Each structure stands twice: as C-alpha cells, then as structure tokens.
Image 1 (cartoon, rainbow, N blue to C red):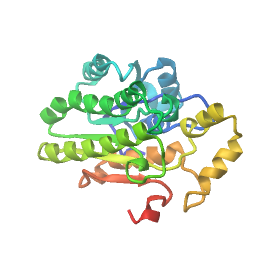
Image 2: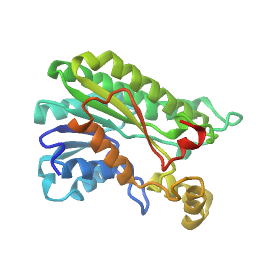
Image 3: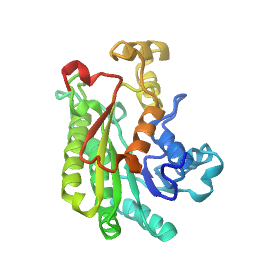
Image 4: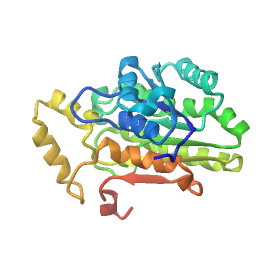
Length: 268
C-alpha cells in the first residue's frame, strides 16, 4: 500500500455527512493516507475532517485537518497556502464537495435563484477556484493530478434535480478543459462519476427528509443498478487512488463511472 508514498494531497470535502454509512470524502482520506500520502483534509467542519484522519491508522501522523467553507473563495486559497507552508508542494487536488437534495427544491417549476446559485457555488465554483489556486504550483512542479467527483447525473437524465445536474455537467466540462490545457505541463485531470451510492449523503439525508426507512431507500436504489447493489464510499476512494497514482500516468481528461453499470444501460 505505497502507491501514493510521499505525495501531498489536498482533499476538499474530507469530512462526513451525518449518518451510518461512510462518505466518499472520508473514505478517500483514509485510503490516500493508507497508500502513503500526506493529506491536508479540508472540510467546513474541522472535527469531521480530523475524524477522517484519525480513522486512517498509524500512517496518519503526517496529515492535518483544515477548516474551510468552499463558498468562501479566500478559504480555498488559505487551504492551498497551508499545504504549501507545511509540505512545499501539492501533488494531488481531490475535490469531493457536493450538495444535492439538501439544497432545496430543484425541479424547474420550483427552482429559485438562491437554490441554483448555492448549488453551483458549492459543487462547481469551488472546484474551479480550487483548481485555479493549485494550477501555478503544479505548473512550476511540472506535475500534478486533479480529481473532481462529479456524478452520473452529468450524463443520464433520470434526476429531476436541475441545479445538481447542471453543476455536475459543468464539472465534467471544466475537468476536460483543464486536462487539455495543462497536459503539456505534466498535469493530469480526471472526473469520477459516482452512481447510486449508499453513503450518508445519499441514504441518510433522504431518510431524514422523507421519513422513509433505510431499507426502503436502499432497496429502491439497488433495483436501478445492474450489479444489484449500491456503491460504497470506498468504491469512489479506490478509483481516486488509482487516478492519483502513477498507474494512471497516461490517463487524463476522462470521466470514470463508478456506478455498477448504470450508464451502460444508455450505452455510455
């Protein structure tokens, strides 16, 4: 477990939504540290980011939690500055922050300016600005990896969440543009497209808002996945480890579905 040995990773969205299941961000912190990375675990809730680090085991001594709200651009700059102050380089930027049904009504007939702007500020603008701040560092290094966690909703049309879907589609477009523009500098950029996951954000949030049981929500989601189960946070985290590692050194500008075959149903 040394695929990221000595790499410095800035993981934004490193904490955990309330609930039983592990989220993508926490699982990614754990897996990156296990693989030898030094992680600046950034989250709006400092204690949650620290919990993620604590769960990573004995290799976590060279990692650090950092509090930042991604809607406050200066906080993203501060996170980048802190990573540089401590380690002097940034090898990996992993952007995992996202909000979906918690943001409010997003069907077109009920969508408001405030909800639309909030979703895009968190899901898309934060990713763009974080990439902006690490770009000069990675260009000077002549190396770096950017990973953005998007969603299969950027491709398929099943979700009625207009703001969520457009923000994730924007993330895919931005990642591809960033990849092409910076390939000459040895920088790679890829997006991960999770499908129907069984994370705290996906399941526990729906339980709180709908009053339905966990079993009902999980079964409904599993019925839509060709593999017959929902994904876990570790499914996304393991994909991120691969994309961040030298094993993926000839891969850039891709959208990697982690979806149990869901997009295959539409031939994608």
